[in-house]
Length: 161
Length: 290
Image 1 (cartoon, each protein chain N blue to C red):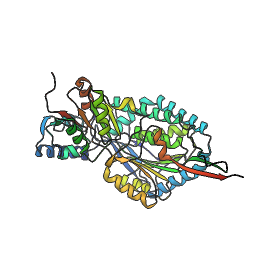
Image 2 (image 1 turned 90 degrees about the vertical axis):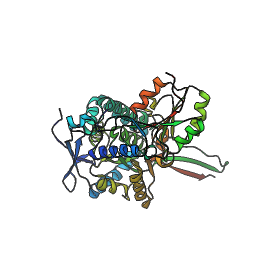
Image 3 (image 1 turned 120 degrees about the horizontal axis):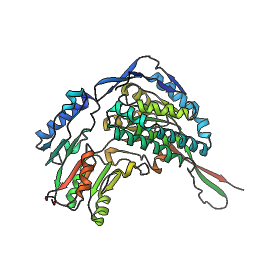
Image 4 (image 1 turned 30 degrees about the vertical axis):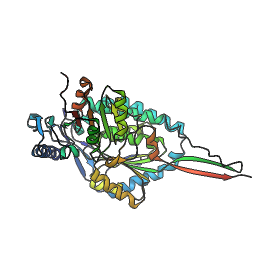
């Protein structure tokens, strides 16, 4: 795993980890600046895993941009969908299940521009339209759809005779 | 192993030029904290020049036969493929991305140019029947000068994903890469010129987001803006563009929740979840089978 982009980002991630602990999440691993930071002078942070994260916590709702993984438990499919849709973002979602009906059903309920089932990324995904629902943005990049941003339609009507 | 500090310039109208103000902003190697390169510090005046160049190059570029544009994009793709190792190394040094991931990004960049090369000559319109007295048809025309603001996390990939379709559509561009990650895109832009992309079709202005980026987003001479970044900056960019009634394509990030059901294949899921930072996996409360 590489370093973060800057010392400011390193501080931001440290702050998020501190907030997550204050909000009651259980730190399973990481949660500190990596020893590589001292050795090389770069912006390295340990891969960090939090369990028992609550849906209302900042860790669940905001984008951290660092190696911090948050785990939120659920009991039912409805709860899982509700948890996934509770964020203000909606860019990409992953669904992991062997049940094809559940895969279709859940994919149809998720507020996201892309849903991956039992995988991620499809090897680059250049062919697949990509873009946001909600605060993740609008417009589609990649795929044939991307051309729509760079074209405008002109209708030409010729009266004959 | 870090190379000597590079001095980079702006790419405007086919020439590598210093910024008007003449000074530079630094980009740092995040693995060491050392300065890697000095980028020309573009401001409003350089953005003006770049937009003017893109505007001037537009009639000839949109008038280029689609098959010719396709051929050029394919050439660029092949050359990016040939330069993968150098681009990956540059990207890795510039933004601290592991070399393996940077190499994957370079391959995807080549694929973008290849994919949109294949579409350049297939941008079709329709005819709409109104009876014998009318001939009605639609044409899809390039929107004009496209401005692209590219973030630091995937400069090569996100830059290429905006540049390739814009070129395929017949648009010209002004690209503002992030200060922290400009080197790979500068290299690709020079490569595109070497492939025969006409001067002024692809321009690159480097510098600070608050200077060159803001100037580009608010420029009245652009016809479209593609932005990838945070919600806060995206909102500001959208407001800037709104004043000139410029349409925007905004990619503002996400949380990427993963729903891991009890019957999930964990051997497949766990490696994916662990390599995707900033993800929010959601798991069932029941214990997993051993």
